[in-house]
Length: 173
Image (cartoon, rainbow, N blue to C red):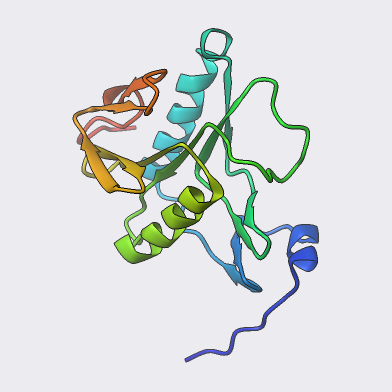
């Protein structure tokens, strides 16, 4: 078992990590990322929203820090916020939508910890997308609800087909 060095939130906010890391009660936690299907999905989700931003009045941002509680900073794979965007560099109010793209190394337990932070922060729409299994879930305080190939927000404003943002099975990209 390793020894964890705790740091103050101010030090974390002054520091750049590559890739960026979550901050939970003084501990810097690595995020799973860097594999092709994950990266492809993250980029295509941002592109999907940004091609529609004039109609939806929403802006997608990859890997934006959000201060979900005084000692907790999370970095969703994609944050979707209303336009005009908040002026702050680290969001301190909930965005319209948080999207997590699963990695092969993600565990349900660790993912649920992230999602609970988003729910407690007040995020109204939360999606989890698995690019390996071509599945998606909408997350609420009632739990995970499987989507049938189209990701939808609770208010019906967004309907994003997974086929638009995921590599087709056995793709040669």
